[in-house]
Image (cartoon, rainbow, N blue to C red):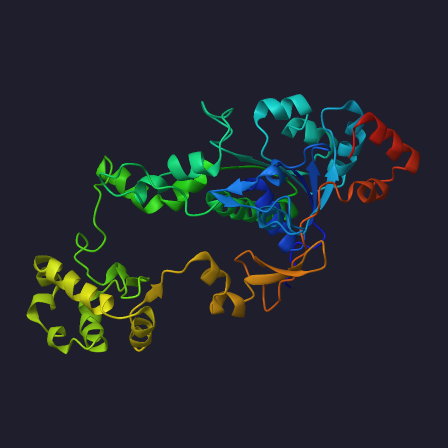
Length: 408
């Protein structure tokens, strides 16, 4: 059962990455997802020429990852929600859907008459989902947000990776970073709501905010701060934890290795033997946690020397013989070609609009032994006529709707 949501219909009235990425996951899981786009401008994501300084190739390619990632597997209809002539089309789409996804702010939802009361008036059994910046309650319910503001900055991640005394806070490691994590939260919530509706007969209204997702991601330190009664002090990962076998170390060829051996006294003798530093394996300075705490600088220097004097390939060969967890710090190209991801089908093939095979990161959930097959993202308003015909609108009506600007 690699398509558990087959038969579920999702109507997406949203743009950019946060909520659309949830629609992409639901499509991966088998749902039929129809994406409503402005008939002139389309999803704002389609106009992004750069993301974090990298060109998207938006004007040069039939395959644009910034669009494909959060929109694969959907069909697109260009519909002007602000025109009365478009309303019968929207109403019919709502009537036939199980789930309604949106990230529009309350004032916009009210203006377009797509708030929960409006949608439920047409389809009382629909699951209504809002992806918000700061939640549907409270002083910021009308405040717009991106993941860089609500998830990353306000949610605690930026502070967590910014060293003490830094001239500026650290920025997100990738475009859509918090959006894609939030999209998974929405998709999981939708799956739970679908099950709940089947069991109880009651449809849910879901709100997933980027701020809440950010707090969930940083809950370890947030919970500790709440217990401590104030912010946690900034710590050096290697020296302040009294564990030289955690943290990142630089190799001789300029790469980095992340160690995560959380029981240092257990792994220390093995690490020293693997790195041909037997003289330190049973050194009493490093035999107990108390001794390590007193001699942490010396221990860190030993590890730095062991790793820093070898290339990444040499370190990897030696560490592979051990039992302690470690990993290479990979760049995006290496992640896309990671053997474990590929073996588990998490880098999947998709055929683009020009018929060329491309690769995309799959959602992280694997059902049974099914091999995930992705479908490309729709081109702007690609399925408008097709969807309208399915809804029962005849050719004369299509022509009239186009003439009024109600559809693309």
